[in-house]
Image 1 (tube, rainbow, N blue to C red):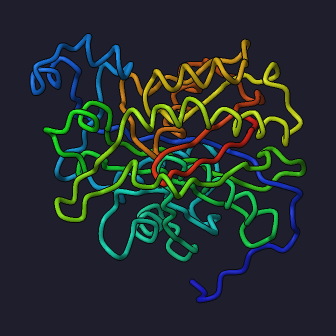
Image 2 (image 1 turned 180 degrees about the horizontal axis):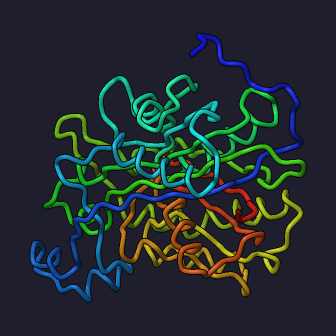
Length: 322
């Protein structure tokens, strides 16, 4: 294989999603089992999170491995060969270690000569990676990009800490992005509120996650929906035209609040977190994959993606479903 990989220079007008993939660990943790830790009931947890169960990775399952399986699934769905992949982006906040996950994922899927890097924007990571991929394609720096959201959040959770233990799960979702003669990934609306970064953070002494749940809930239910509406405006799309609204699956109460505030009455609202949990950067591609698998959204429809979380970071864009 040549050392220098050439990317075709016929620059497209934009990028489009070509296919989705997913990897959900077999292990699960249901709300009844969790409730016994805290002297609560399963109904009490469901009423506050909307979650009946969470996926939990085994000791042998890690971020690169789960990410690679999701990426292979996405490549199969897209019809793109691994040899055609120019760039692999892994959105993750839980990989650990200095070398990251993207290079391992690229090698595992057979795209070993592709550029590869991790992107850490926590729960907004997939949407931010999608924006980067679309811009790379439009600029001619890449033609086919694999985006992976992969997290092993349970590795960062103190099992005795109620606010985090009852929401987070493990999984990976992926998408393949390719060139398009017309834009099919709308302009991103993104940013951060660094003044509130401490609302979700990892304690350096214990290496476990801390989250100010009530404050995060207030921020997510009051500050995020204007970002989503601005993404629709920049894409030239009315909420009434949306076929799906796919928020980060932080908490199903937040998901439902965002959907009401956006006002997309015709759209199906993704609620994959009910059985998978909050999987941070993996949650949006997982939810899209499930909507397609269940036939709840059709190819060609428009979907609004809304990522938000630790940082506090956010990103949203309108995309056309492959």
